[in-house]
Image 1 (cartoon, rainbow, N blue to C red):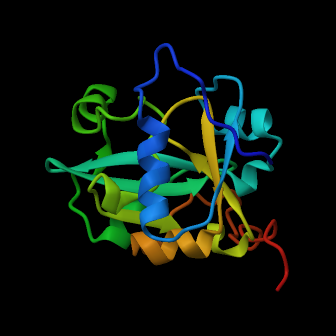
Image 2 (tube, one colour; image 1 turned 180 degrees about the horizontal axis):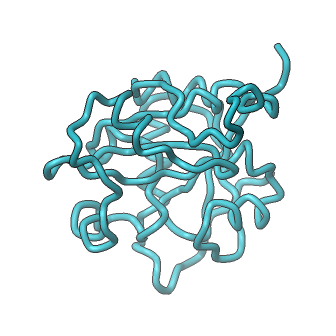
Length: 184
């Protein structure tokens, strides 16, 4: 991983990744910036950055009666909206926010590249417990060409999210849902 700063960006909000970096800097969070080819999905971001999708985060924006909430899950998993609703004690109206809602609420960042730093936006946040089992995670830096590698414990420390099992379970028995995690 190498630190890289762009000379210029054509269709990127000029300070999208700089805003995320400045926010982390102001809180004393170490990170590494990875510049990669433009990607539009967390799985593609993982591949472009050479990072395991289980160690790459995707930040989803939820909407509950006009309030926007971030949900952060590994790129290798899918959000279970019912589990998120329970973890957040949200209303039955909790849903994924539309692209137009996201663009209007978070204009400083590229659509689909919201960083998982709820207090910076500001927005409440729920993070899937699986990320805590990783030494480093890769997350969006605010645009489609920059990612940030950080310690997930730092993410939890500075965002103070609700932490819960919010991913869809793949097996009916649920016994294999955490098998991909490193043994401690």
